Image (cartoon, rainbow, N blue to C red; front, side, top):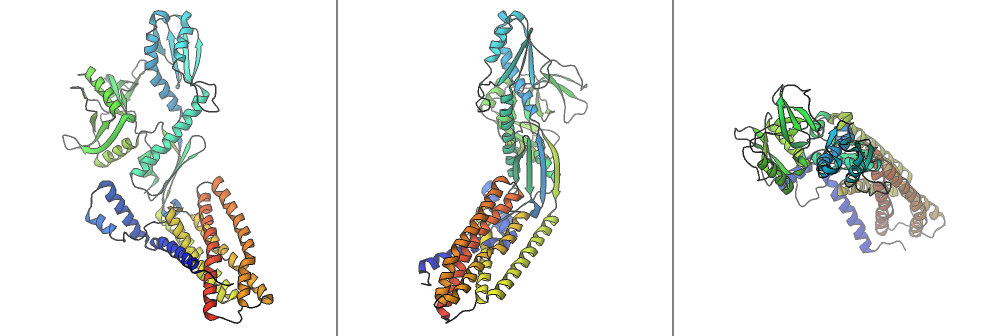
Amino acid sequence: MLQIDRWKRILIIGICLLGLAYAMPNLFYKRVEAHNDAVAAIEKTGVTTPELVEARDGWPGWLPNGLVNLGLDLRGGAHLLGEVQVDQVYKARMDSLWPELRRALADERATIGAVRRVASPEGTLKIEIGTPEQLARAVEIVRGFSEPVTTLTGAGQTSLAIDAQGKALTISLSDAEKSLTDDRTIQQSLEIIRRRVDEVGTREPTIMRQGEDRILIQVPGIGSAAELKALIGTTAKLTFNAVIGTGSDPDARVGIGEIVLPASDREGVFYTIDETPVVTGEELTDAMPSTDQNGMPSVDFRFNPTGARKFGAYTSANVGQPFAIVLDNQVISAPVIRQAITTGSGQISGSMDYEEATRLAVLLRAGALPAELTFLEERTVGPELGQDSIDAGQIAATVGFVAVIVLMVLSYGLLGVFAAVALAVNMGMIFGVLSMIGATLTLPGIAGIVLTIGMAVDANVLVFERIREELRTARGPARAIELGYEKAMSAIIDANITTLIIAAILFVLGSGPVKGFAVTLTIGIVTSVFTALYVTRLMTITWFERARPRQIEV
């Protein structure tokens, strides 16, 4: 019998209204965007200004405020492809191993003799002992610092590879440990870059791994690739090192474990420092822009308990001695320790302006990149180009929408009008779902929406053609409409399930733009089936109940 229960009608109308309500904020994009930014700023800082209040009140708080985020190709922004120099991590691991290993070997001095580090390729640690006959004992001590590799591919291997010849030990990371270190370094770099980008309040950045040691970074809404590089292109590696000497020769001869670094604010001045830091930036818990005693821009920082304890112990034992504050291989300050610093806090000051102090605080808060990031590709997409893409997408969608409506109305008359109304509801629901899930719309995503416009009426065409056939044999138009929906159901489900499978494959195997296309295509398939089978049917039955036509033309 041709009817729909009242509760089903209420549910269908309710779903449509809910989808359109969530799509509505996109009609007032800039106003809602300003409202969301103001609310986030007030919640983060707790400070309200007249401008923030005005922006917050520009959109009612009880209405949905989710927006479809615009991707890089629509909004404009910056694109970077960086390569992580993982080899630097191997060197850092060996340098940090040497102090502990030296103490352990020194405890066996009576057996193995004097111990010293000699020059070796980066990423390796070469040690000579005074008693070659006890080389096996030295190897045994070093093996005590090696740990089993816990990955499946590295089963049975240890973290250190040890080569013993004559009176020398050459230590490096094993292949399994290098592979594990590479993965850990890339993941850490991804997280730190994401935190740095999030600190400046950008929307929906794309930060993902590409290949073995590369990272793709796309940030919509940022001014240029140079601005993005300034934010994430430095390691922001902060260390506190012991000062061994000062001079003017950058090529001064130094001992093993010592390096020469330039002063950042004094041209021609170079410091010889101990390469092993006393405390590192990884032990910082907070960093905030501030001013020093002279009113100049500075950065206040605070250590965690471990860092505070180490820093306090070092300053207590070295009162009257200078120590170097090193940032990205430059000595930004080398103050003399006047008294023990046990509070766990300090200040970085020097030749910086307020913008540089704020940026340095952001970098230190987010943490140091574990290795240098070399940029292989950079591209800036201007907002004008993004707007051109939006305009082109709107034109394509509008032309497709009008063409489909004209075709449906000319082909199926009043039922074609119902299909056109359902298509409009379908488009609104697509944007409503995209807004609810916080999806990012790209140019391929717009292509998916345009494709959906053409596919959305397929189900209606199948139903209407089936109704047309049933009118020749069924007893009355009501029975023809009912049979039309019943018999077309299997074909509609089969066609859309196969398309969903293809969309799922695109999403799983694709990346970036392909995934955006797959997301909008999937949402469009679901909403188009809903509008074709329920919305169009509801309008048809409602019209039929009121008009009670003796015959219909399809």
